[in-house]
Amino acid sequence: MKKLFSNLMVGLVLMMSFGSMVSCSTEPTIDPKESFFDRLGTESIVKLQIESDLSELIENRDQKMTQEATLSVENSNGGFKAYPLKISLRGKTRRGLCEFPPLKLDLNKGFLEAEGLKDFDKYKLVTHCMDDSELVLKEFLAYKLYNQLTEYSFRVRLVELTYIDHGGEM
Image (cartoon, rainbow, N blue to C red):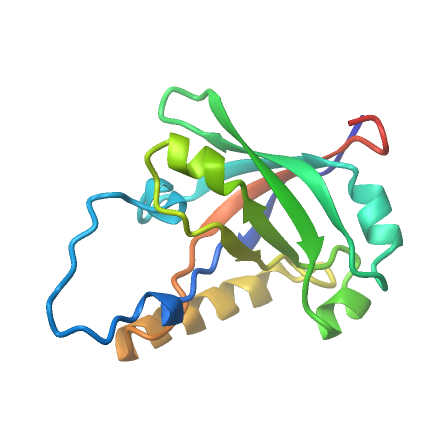
């Protein structure tokens, strides 16, 4: 087991589309459940860990493949809460251009339901590219600005992400 990019600020992380949440009804609907994204909080940088066979995923970046992983989220007392998920590579240009391509996170809906969370289970993870984390911050700010212009935009969060590569040992 080895750590990749240990404690590296990667950036713009989880993006959630609101397009699927728009309702045609004029009656406001109130859902008391929060989403996984909401549970991460609002402003502070969240520490996450992704554990999987990342070497295989990166080596086979030209193929569509999905694999099991664990996403751990740091809680207020410094411990981590683990969530089962599947990860896959996303993006076309960045997949070929970046050393570590962006990921799609697909959380387990059954686990989300058991936790009392909404069933929004798919999130996009944008990572650094070409050793320039400043570009991630610029992209993050562009999305935050777009949030001010329209409710039909991606919500974004900055995270500090540690990748743990099990190299086939998981």
